[in-house]
Image (cartoon, rainbow, N blue to C red; front, side, top):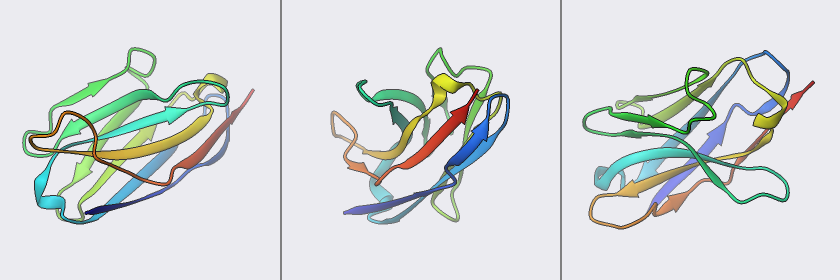
Length: 119
């Protein structure tokens, strides 16, 4: 089992920045990659960004490229999402997730943190 705890959400004006953190604990040695997803009211959950644990290879949704940066701290088993130039359409609950090696999908999810961007 892996436990994930997100923090750093809040209310920010358009054009502002926030940094989300996700601390992982438990059976983290099986982690292949960690990702951030978001879900806005009335919409499906969507991929935001991901980073592989061993090579630090990153990937981003087109909607956040150039504005968001995912990074990690191996020693703290923590992944971050730096969000700059925030837009009202970035408003959502943000979730981090762990994808273990050898499985077809993300296996563990955090409880989510609310990000609200006012215009």
